[in-house]
Amino acid sequence: MSKPSPISTTVVLGMTADGKISASDPQAPRTTDAADQEHLEYQVSRADLILVGAGTIRAEGTTFTIRNPELLAARAVRGQSPQPITCVVSRSLELSVDLPFFSQDVERWILTTRSSMERNTQPTLSNLARLVDLGDIDLNWDQAYDFLDKQGIRKVVALGGGNLTATLLDAGRIDDLWLTIWPLIFGGRNAPSPVEGKGFIPSKAPLLQLLESRQIGSEIFLHYQVLS
Ligand SMILES: NC(=O)c1ccc[n+]([C@@H]2O[C@H](COP(=O)([O-])OP(=O)(O)OC[C@H]3O[C@@H](n4cnc5c(N)ncnc54)[C@H](OP(=O)(O)O)[C@@H]3O)[C@@H](O)[C@H]2O)c1
Image (cartoon, rainbow, N blue to C red; front, side):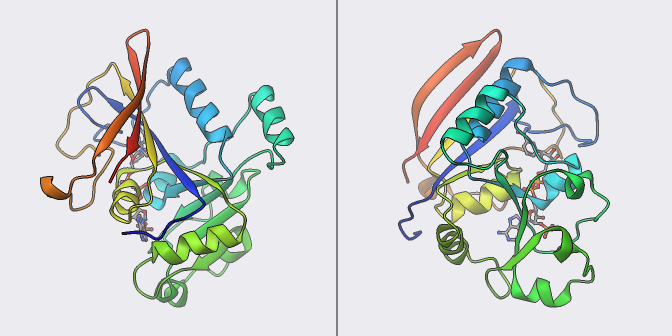
């Protein structure tokens, strides 16, 4: 059970009708849908901080940025920086400093562990991102959320992938989820799903309440609150 937190965390993910967040080959090019991109941009525009797994940054190379002038203006009115901080979660710290992410005009943090910091073989990483150790061997989410609280973070948007979402769910840190169902089928035994990790037994499975559903063309947007 997580400690109560003043920080709200929303997961925003898209998946195919067969429940895949990417194809078996994560590098395979995929066309993006305008309505889903608009939805993603709006959700991200509310964030003080984006949480993203190292696997996603390695696969996609960049973090999501807001371009819509109205959303940027709304952030300025709320006193938020133009782009949310992108906070990568990584145990290995195996993040190539050549990734385009490290040249993007965003503030970068990396949440990791003390043992990973001690093993870190890339000293330049700390010039490119703020490295924060939160836990000895495993990342301690209570410590992580205390740290974010002290930094004034109030709204976190978690953009996956499946392993990060699993660990956040397990730690009881997710308040709500937006899932876009793309009218596609990727299939593939090894293609990732929204929640990876070791899975939950049915009696301990997080329970959801549907707050809202919308349809745009053949795409469906589902908003769930996490009840337990
Ligand atoms: N459709 C969508 O909306 C969507 C969204 C996001 C991603 N994706 C896709 O999903 C795939 C990536 O998903 P994924 O599940 O493989 O990777 P992921 O969740 O992005 O990243 C997993 C990695 O994050 C780090 N991590 C996660 N939880 C941690 C914890 N509690 N403590 C320490 N480190 C932790 C570890 O990094 P280290 O390995 O560095 O230790 C772990 O290997 C990509 O293909 C991407 O394109 C799709």
